[in-house]
Amino acid sequence: GSCRHRCCPGRNNACWALGTRRARCYCDSYCERTADCCEDYQTTCRRAAVGCAVGPWGPWSGCSSPCGVGSKARSRQVTVPPRHGGEPCPDLKQRRGCLGEHPTCGTAK
Image (cartoon, rainbow, N blue to C red; front, side, top):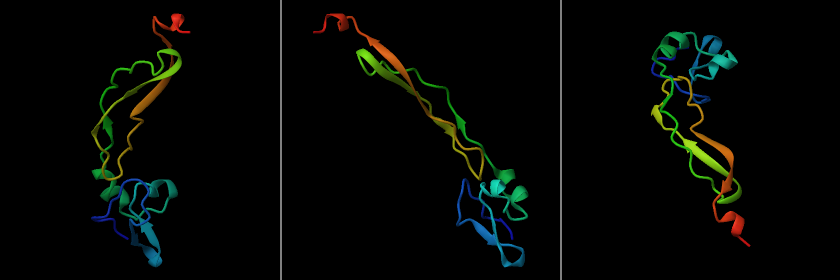
């Protein structure tokens, strides 16, 4: 089977061709894990693969709770989306715990 004009990112069960003995072979990037790629997958699809690229992390947000336990978050943007089965994007958001210590916390009743 041939993957010509049929390279798909991720796991895509609709991305297949008829291979030897009329069995399905796949042209999605997941076929490398399951070892059921079409014979020309490496030369046809991986050559055109573009991995995800992301920008730098933004600043941490303020604590979600002015007094006591809360959380902070930060994010980053995708600068180049993955194509043709390239490496997927890493996490775009992070969260961590924080302790709000606003000056008015000690005086609250």
